[in-house]
Length: 465
Image (cartoon, rainbow, N blue to C red; front, side):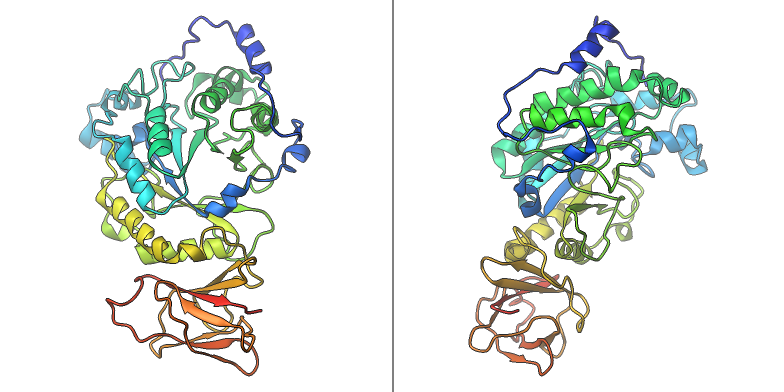
């Protein structure tokens, strides 16, 4: 970490500015107090539950070594894990420091419009870009990250602004930002940590100013917090910041936040719950949640050493999406661009494959609700979603039965009213009501070329109970 410079702002003045963020008129009559009881009562903006599917983008200086993990600096310098130490010995001179990767983070081929077009083609409804990871490098020209940001170092470009403009001009996606509260090796954080967080130099002079800067300058509609560094939410003044975000900020009516706002807050406080990385409980939760996961099974950042078997197949990704949505969650699927700003062909292929699947089956995903049963009790790998106003239940099945007959144990048919269609096929299908519960659907006899898609199919069941 390079030394931080306050650029002429004395600390008391900065503190005063933080305690009195710029006011703006609130649209909502509801005012939120800086307490979890009040903040947790805020109704989550409806768009988030309707969206169901988003793209996570892990990109930063860690994309330069692009080896092992986005935690490269920590594993190399702090934990001194042998494979990271050996990697540096084999590829860089002995005097090389992590900060020396900064100028090599060129983003030379970064084209925000191209990224936006790929994300639009994926069928996602929102994106979340890592504006700053635990290494502290900001992808915008932060006034509080002097000489360790994308304007002063490396790209010499405002990455956050370029992507924000492209997303908002070229797509119908919502723009979101990830932000790490702490930084591994920032001297002020380490000093605060050594005081058991009785000192609050780091959040006052770094974290909170940057959060206000991000929200006011880029107006993200997802603010995805992470990395509490073991410090409680009182240290971060999370409730104070969130009260401002919900009451006064330019995105107060549409912004959604997650649950990572201090030690002990995860899966307990905040807008939607993440609970853990790659969280997929497989059952209904009483609170809105998100499954953030990676196409690369082993890393969030790009890895040069990844083999093809390290990437989830599109079939596995569709399964993740279907299971997650059936249980009331959103899927946030991560990619890691290269140091020069390229989305590798493996990631692009997976995104476009997901988009082609959603073109056929999106009706069974977007704007759906959870049904009384999340999955079938008779046939494995069948998951349900629901649109109550349309009286539609969707049965999404991940394996096409060789018999051509799909047995569904959960839906109960209504004679003369129930209708069954295969999405992408359109014609009503024959079905038989089973004696006890459920129905047996006769699937159409289709060649591979006639199949509406390749990796999972959806039946629309009208008027079932």
